[in-house]
Amino acid sequence: MSVTTLHRPTHRDALSALSAAFERGELVTVFGRCTVDYDGRAASSLGPGDRLLILKPDGTALVHTDEQRTPVNWQPPGSEHRAAVRDGRLRVRSVRGNPDERLDVRFERVDQVSALPVTGGRSVDVYGSEEDLRQEILDDPDLVEPGFEPAATERQTAAGPVDLFGHDDEGRPVVVELKRRRVGPDAAGQLGRYVEALSREVPDGTEVRGVLVAPSVTDRARELLAEKGLSHVPLAPPAESSTAADTAASGDGGEPTTVGDSSSEPEDGAD
Image (cartoon, rainbow, N blue to C red):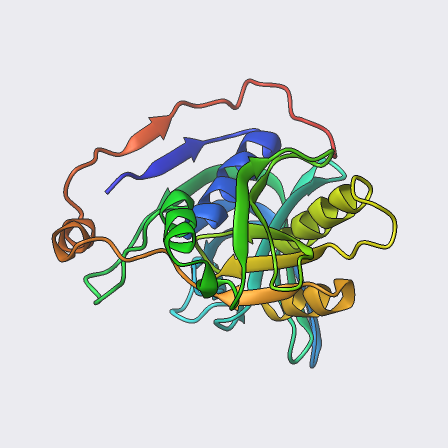
């Protein structure tokens, strides 16, 4: 098991670590001085204090202090984690769509960030890469939809290369974006940009369709896809062999990676 830990990172370095951990579906802990605001079925605020934030890949968010076993604030599974640097602070937000709830944790100082690919000995499916997913679709294009015909991989557009390009059974261009894990609105926005870019390249009046292939999407991502007229196909990469899954669950094969103290670096401003 490979563990990444940053001690006294700049806000920008902490943001990079969080973004990468969210993409990999890892368990994240952040410790530092922060404020906490909750808005939803009720509202609450906590002033500046040293607290531990735990973000789980299933969407759970927990804020702990040095007292008691229960968190002082939390969000349930199914929430979506986001992070940004705003006004000289690292802002970590946990958002739930139904009911509408938001937990905002703003760190003025980050003492430690850790990302851990925890399985906890549970029975889990270890999925392959996006390349595995693409190959699976190339072998059986009907997984996207009946009649889909792939034409190119990594097709270039003004918005960047698309994972898979083809045509549907009516001859309409189709942009397929592949994701190996549950995704949020960023993935829907990315697919929308590809579709818009390709629409400017084809003859006027040609409808360009967009399909997001991912195991699952958040509520907000589903809403955004619907608003943009895009589709979601629930599909995960093929699972690795049971030996690989057993190795991942046992935690063998990787030493912790530690990034040294960066407290002397100048802090990045808001992005």
